[in-house]
Length: 475
Image (cartoon, rainbow, N blue to C red; front, side):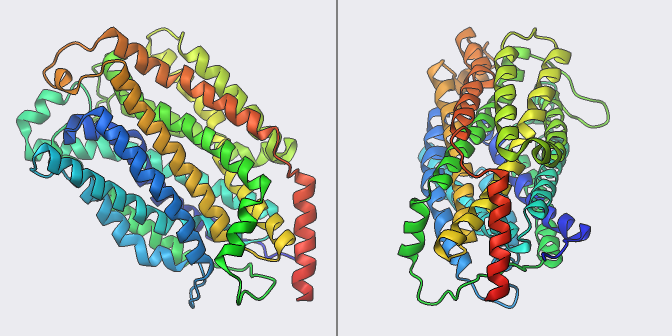
């Protein structure tokens, strides 16, 4: 009989992804804009950096997962990483968004080093955190609930970031460079460099508190059935790479995250260049891009909350496929929506609700693969398998953000012309619209097709759970 997980522990577990998401959303939605319009490198250079840094870092996730699986401490295997890396995580965020007074070549080197280190620290804390899901409970229903709490708090964290980041940047911009702030205040988020480092630094302090609350409020319960001595890394990797189910889920997860990354990275440009809405909400300082992000996060949260109910009725696989198909169709329709704020925000809400179903299902399905792998091999390699999810996440964001930069450059985006206040070419605006609508829809189609081949039905997952519980009682 599995232990019932109390509400306070589910909330504590959710705090961890609230912290991760607060940082990750900054990198996913603001990084390209920061590097081109604040830091001062080209879209092509930023795109290449995103690709190189995240590609090699995604494979570092697997190393972290292996280390976590073999960690022994009085706090468990995975929880200690929340304690060890909370402060480095926040510090690297602020350092990454600092703009040094270097020449162009020096800036590029600084960007590569700091961005790469940030991704490494993110892996060091996020991979063990993700793996913790499989160690808290062995009950599929409890895992669904934990995964839903995790993603709910992730979107709450993102929501908090969108509420705070732009006002924080504007506040610090007004302090450091009142003239520069006044010039940009009605157009979009301020581009005063020091303000970005300070704003991200404040978000980082909140992340430290949330990670420590997650560490203090969770417990590792699920143990390996077999003894783990003398099991080589080569054997674990061999078992993983032979797991067809794992490959399918990594592929579909990659497509789903690519969908989000492409849409998110271009939103600031879309509103500034295509919508051209010069508006800030009274009392908050939110511009239309921030409001668009907030609407999306609120809708994502509704989708996350509905995911356990829908997956319990229709099954995880079917729910995933329906959500991806609907989000893809709506994304294509988005291209033809009139340039009216109400219509744009309405489509953002609908698409984001369906997109919100996806992530909690993905994390829960990776936990199911951990069980299936243990039954087949006798090895419970939660860290290794969950690190593959983090790997697909980073690959998705890397390719999405990089493609975003290359598409902008390919359609003729000129950073210097924008800084000089020149009009953006119509070809660039067309590219921005496609990046927000049609191109993400292609990713939805790929995710839908991939999930058709996913073999773990809800019935099979329940059978695996029963068999593992029987073996644990006998061991």
